Length: 482
Ligand SMILES: Nc1nc2c(ncn2[C@@H]2O[C@H](COP(=O)(O)OP(=O)(O)OP(=O)(O)O)[C@@H](O)[C@H]2O)c(=O)[nH]1
Image 1 (cartoon, rainbow, N blue to C red):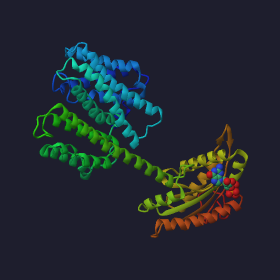
Image 2 (image 1 turned 60 degrees about the vertical axis):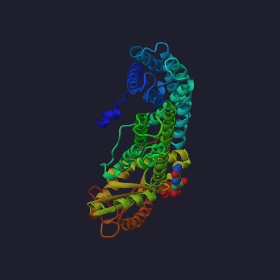
Image 3 (image 1 turned 45 degrees about the horizontal axis):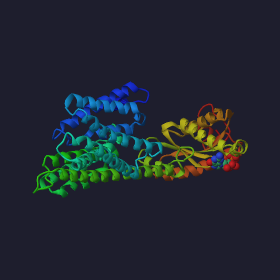
Image 4 (image 1 turned 120 degrees about the vertical axis):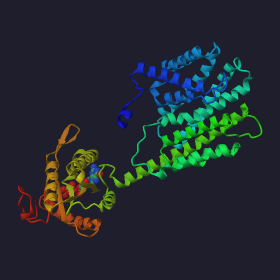
């Protein structure tokens, strides 16, 4: 179910007709929703269309084409032609919607071209400013267009247009840019729902207590959501909270002016307050996303070797710490692998070739070891493999498999095939009650000793303390060498 939802892509660069159809349908749908929320004949209480379409054009940069904007505009005009008697005023009013959509769409597209894709706090703040600029421009055109069909003069209309566009834009555009199919990595626990519960309680408190300050009641709960949930979830919850607050204020269910009746300036102030509040959780959430991604990068950098993508020395010990509980087998084998005459690769083909070969070598070893063992780069051209097995022979057989695989593998470098060999020293023992790290350290020293012997005996071989009788069939019979 999730896979098919993820695979579904409503807009694609090479499907112009489908894109145009999608834009037409979405415009009509959100125009309908906005029109249904109209308090009076003229202006809507909550107008999601501009935020949704601006977010759509911002999310899919290839939609930033005159023809797609035209489809959107035509859909609005057609809706008005069928449902209102605004006549020519509709041309100007809908042009104001387009001003908002195009301004945000183009400004975000410009950001993308500048390579600012990552969710960082500055991007969130930039988005806030883009909505501000787009709302001001939209309000000028919208107020001029509305003067003829409304009893208000220009400035109250301008304030209404601006407040409405700005608040819905700030609430909806981040949502549109981040919305994804949710991923639940583990079962939802009751404590995971606490921030949402706190949010519901705080909105309820706004209704019960009332007054201008009550609009800010959900802020701490929203910040809690930002810390606990993902960026898309935070944007969605912020949007829902802001939208609900606007509707509750407009219907006097949240009474922010106990003594005076609801008027346009009051609504203007409420919308601005909600929009300003909305930026806080989004900024906290993007900060959290940036910190988490940095932490992940740092721990990856520490745990994995950057060049070869296998564990680093410290990463190996971290992984062993995690493995300590699972002793599924009786034996542990530690191998040290050292590429033979690696210096000559650097000397003959250059350091870049040496790096490429090291990465390919690590990949090949990892491929042979599979999921069963841990591969780490201990430094330079020396690697370690740690595997659990049912007996010592399994470890020896794996070492020989790796050695043969490397010997036969053509490492390619600029249309040439280079062949390498590897010397392996091996230590293995029964798993006893000692801590795993202690056993590994002991076996590592043993493996190092046998690696030295492999090198000394002529390289391209595996050496271990196991007697010939213990060795798998078909093996070399040199004493102490497999
Ligand atoms: N390209 C590249 N070379 C490295 C890296 N780390 C270590 N080396 C090189 O690996 C070479 C190791 O050389 P030696 O220790 O003399 O060993 P060897 O040439 O492999 O010979 P034996 O181990 O005795 O078979 C040195 O030339 C190092 O500069 C690396 O990250 N990238």
